[in-house]
Image 1 (cartoon, one colour):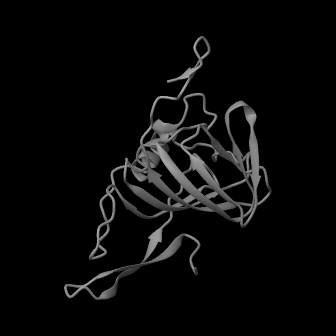
Image 2: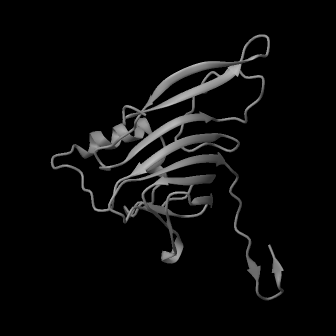
Length: 193
């Protein structure tokens, strides 16, 4: 990667005779936000429906940052260390609108208290490739992750923090899922519902 603001993406597909071909080879531009210094994201690929082959390799128009049921997203995300503040004079309304344009639905998934906690109807597979990430869950439970560590995030309420001194980069695949009401115990009769 020569330019830190782009990631090269090579896409294969099938030609009219069914042979495999490279159908796209280009750089994907970084998503950044004045609201989140040190944050860089790349939406490398996404589908809002399951794949079917043969496929000509054309990109799919996706409407939201997080995939719907049966959809998927392929992402690289970098978080700067905790404590980085937006530069003085940032136009918060304009920066918020730009972030919503670049990452539709992300802000709506965040809890309104500003904590960064959120829940998505996705199963996420994440690999830490640089730095240190802390996954925080309900009741303050934490898992500290370093390069080579992976997380399978099963639609739980969570937030990512970077308490380290350098940026943390994760590679992630998000797969859309169904959310069902939680199973509860009936203490009187011992029946699960």
